[in-house]
Image (cartoon, rainbow over all chains, first blue to last red; front, side, top):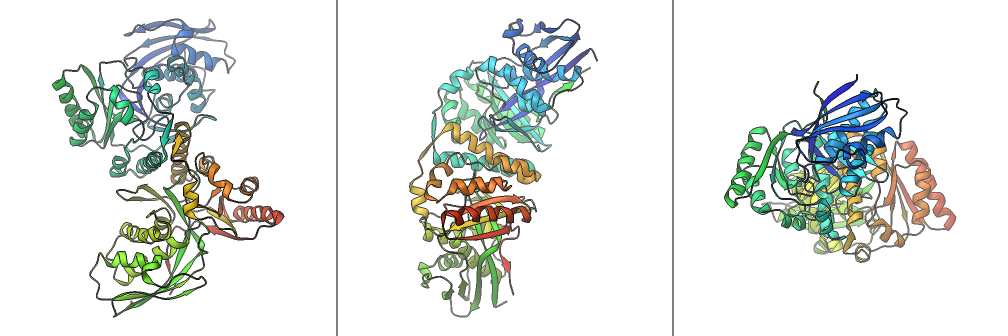
Length: 307
Length: 307
């Protein structure tokens, strides 16, 4: 194989109670990337369609992730990367993670899979370090594993693929404003009340249990965030109204996607997810905020080969 | 049925990462109780063997729990309770919970099971309120459901029975000192660093996942407590030495049982659990601390009928 074209998914990190540990992959939103194995060593970003992002390898998240992989293997080849960037940077659905994860996944395929998925997570995290200053795994892990993932620990890195029920759908609305990940991090408090932390880990336990047992009601009860959402939601226009309307429309739960500004909801079944999309849209239509909206099954596969 | 004799198990609450939410039931340690349905209404504690505990119904945890149940049903009968108290109060393995849970479970049986297990948890919690000042569910829930339980939320009460792998064994060593639950609670800080809370809920997610997938290695990696153990362990003699020796002997993990002073370890298989017991004993033998020690399979059934 000399060339591979892939779909690399957008992802929702945190998922209400799972700040910094949980994530899930989407199916209908993602970048397309074409990676070519070439005789000239090194990594070249040949083209980026759709967004104005740096082509210099060391300044591009896909380039940095690819170099992190190549630093751990003897390759007589180099790689050319073309990115059709369909996820808007800064939207809160893992734009940088999709490019980083896609680059290392595709190169691993072209090299005959010398690395495990958990290694690819580690390489892709270097792209995240470039993008956000922190090498976090909560977006790259679901992009690479698919479905729900748990980052049990960052040091040492310990990523677990979590059973994902088949009827889970996500609705994501992206208000056209910018929230920088660094800003969204800075407004958080460095300590939290023990009583809220207990609620949070109770919900994490409930959500993981609900995913394994496919108990949608338990999943719904567990989609609460007592720690981060109350603080970060003030950065997102009409967050409370969008949340209330999506719950009223039948969503299992609703919260901030990653560090925002996108808002996600989970639903059982596509029909419900589409109704939730309408409910979300009507809020932003009423207050006059531009948005993108996506409805997607939770993507159990992760990255997919297109050619 | 006019009379029932039951085994009601000791329990380990918290289980390292799961402060205030997780618990598990033991199989070889517990109280025996005989509950008789009588024509005279009300609840009478007729006899307590083995411990000097109050016989007055309103001062006895089993009595209070039984009254909480009877307050929610029309019963033309009363109940006499005899307790063979084999779990030492204040040991940290759910002594009060065993009596409270046993009383309501047996009365429910004698009445023809008008209540669900989740209702019985609620009634038994009233016994806990008497014993500790707080109506917590983390011991009564595993006693009643068996296996591992998760208290996702206290208000509203939401208890989830978690899949429990068959080869899980517990070793519990009880140093003969007293740690009051109230004291163990008072030394805790009311706020925790966010970074430690994230580690904790990552481990809760990992432990729950490991229980469902029967991944003993993941269970082992997740049995960490970054929040409570560093503080409470100072109340327990030679805690660090006991923990290190049990891990060295092959335990999956080791921590404080409930609010202590008992120390528990989990192991895969009985043989390993017995080796861990020897390792724990040798530490207390060396420093000259008296102890009780128990090795038990995790009890998936909970309370059992003996006659």
